[in-house]
Image (tube, rainbow, N blue to C red; front, side, top):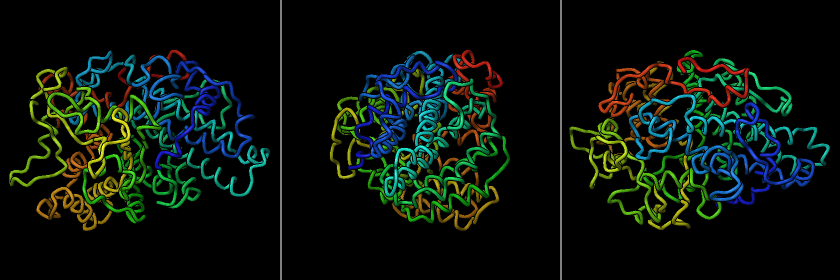
Length: 529
């Protein structure tokens, strides 16, 4: 079963909550729910795998009970506090790909790019990122060579724990990359070398954080399991390569100089690692996508064992409303929240009438124009995510989906390589083959294929939208192409007006939450806030 790695993690959630060092002091409003100590827990070799499961589950779940109860973080609705849910919202809602109808305090501002340092959704992701980093730090401390030796961990157990320790370092690097991308790298920085609670964390910067992530990923690469050899939903060498490729692809936007040749190099490592494109695009977003050989690194969900009001429960329920049949999505009902804009719909327009099967728009009863953001009927709905298998079978639970979130997949590696080639790095002939492989899948034949002359950077931006929409990359992509804040590309309600307008460049990065600035005098706010 795909979820066996994530069972029985409640005890270790309590341990993590009791041992973590926050980004500052008390800003995460955590409460330790279970009285346990590392000395009593880690004497059992099996505990290391269960504790590592909590680290992976930190990307998906929200507390020690599912779907709610004993939350990891206080001060926010537990369902809202999900790492994946908040990451997705901050990557998609301020773009052309998604709008949301709900009026929860701070949420409408995500659609109109009018957030402040007091926004609870910005704070929710920030706190989740640093909770995850602190949990990884604690695990790495407890799995040090010295502590493993003192506890008599030897043989196969020792080998297994060392792999898990390296994976914890990967997960920490992943969260630090999110901090770099979302907050411009001007964030508190702590590792396992920092004593818990001894001093307030110092603030780092984009250049230093970029170098740390790069150095850390290269250090752990040889220590990770080989690509496609690890247990499902655990990271391996290919996950490291993919994160490096994404780090390098966005290096120029992060202010540390262009590194597109490096992006191409690591994308090619993923491409050559034995992954294959899923034959049918929609199968990537169904309950049995754990069988796909295209997915490089997923966030795993299971309707029985990983219940949450965030994650895939949110991504499957929130886009269903109006006249849409909830049962056709394998769920008990829709939440009537998420739709898309006409600007995104227009990316699929083809004068020749050819059909791109990736265009999964639901239009019955839906208006293309968004006159009112709060009305679900305004804006086309999207039917990408379902709690249904590739063969049409309903998931194991009609509330909480079995569908996994493909955080990294082969198609993204193809497009990273292709973009690098359009920017002067990589083989353009090979890049064209990769892009046309995706378009052949999308159109069912070669009718949608492009020529070498059509392979431009702007085409790749649009193709990334068509291939990867609602997978949490659009904000980052638009920033890289200088179309996120500028007037060169606007969409409905960008900047708070119906037709869209340019916004200030400082909005490329989110603010450091005011709560953390108050708690830690070492921190300074991002420019513009």
